[in-house]
Length: 492
Image (cartoon, rainbow, N blue to C red; front, side, top):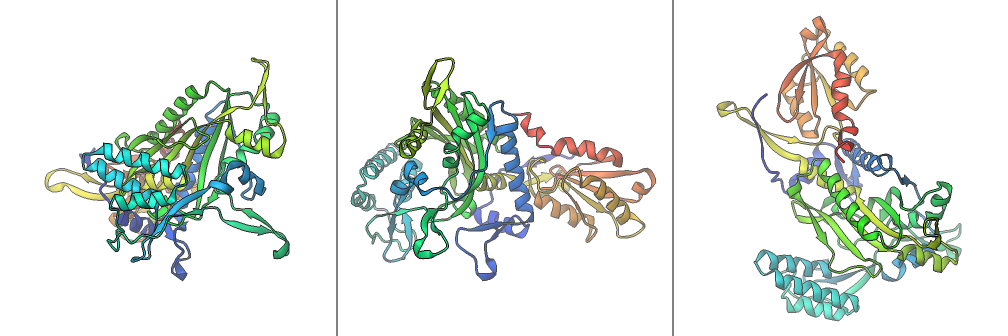
């Protein structure tokens, strides 16, 4: 095997965005019409990677668990759902504009960036004090105080360099629309800003029809929509996105142990898909939502810093109790062991599919050095786990003659029912290897003249460049074991 040294990923966000577009992972939405801000389309390779991540999460949260089932709730829900959840009255972000640059910012993010600067300068206590003061002002809805704090901290617009700020205003993040045949008579409803409420309003349906016993969970993958005023950082913050959430219903008093359990489980998941432990960390919430007992984020080290990719929250019984009160219908569980009724407490795990995609992509784009001395060669590869790669194997005839393309097509047809394959005969074999490295294909199968004689092929491994000779009959089994999602699930 050739010597291999992998460098720490050093690609900037602009490099990530460029690679994602050039190799068919992510395109700007409506690019033909100059695009739509904070909305993106997944290309032919991107949709495969994202679907693989979603499928893995689904299997990990349902199939691999004894007491978690899934649902698929509607995007449109009765508007009282969002009244009960608090979204109608309190789903807001504090916004502020710079009068000189005409740019809009989230006031809390400006202050959080200042706090991070204090930490980097060696005075984290100043940053902590700043965050506490910001939390106090926001809790009191003292928006004028938030503006005064921005001015006192000498926070300037990154573009204009001035402190010419407007007042701070609250913006509700929900998209609204109308349901009805005549606009004047239509009812206002909302595009859901999260998927969790679809689980909560179906709690009784699932519990009764599935004969579920506490503790149990309900999982869901689905679209959500937020009218982000300041949307940025590629697919990290978008107006249309996908969430993968699981609500775990537990007996009151046991929520602490289950919170710790899911906190550890979810960190293991991110490491199992190939993210380096040093690029992950926990971030405990200092400012808790009014309904929460505890909350922690799993953060990934993006090119723009550590940011949340998943949240684990101890939500108490707030959601079910709120829906019970507003609907007037009992949402309780009879516990045979305790011989009593109660509203379960909830532990939530919520990961953004788009953020997980971006973290996985950022982690995988790296350079490797193969060979030694004068033979050393640096290559850029997309080092995805084989089970997550959009294409598992590429079948590449060495030439376009002598029956090699026909042999290659026969192999392609035999393997494509087992896993995602790609067939290509154009350009030199070296250029074709490079293209497959850049989309993350773990195995390239070269078909040569010897293949016609003994039904063997050369299999090249993406990271090392190592090549081995294998019988064609052994390809499905040998490669299949390495590209199966089961190879990751066994490590959870």
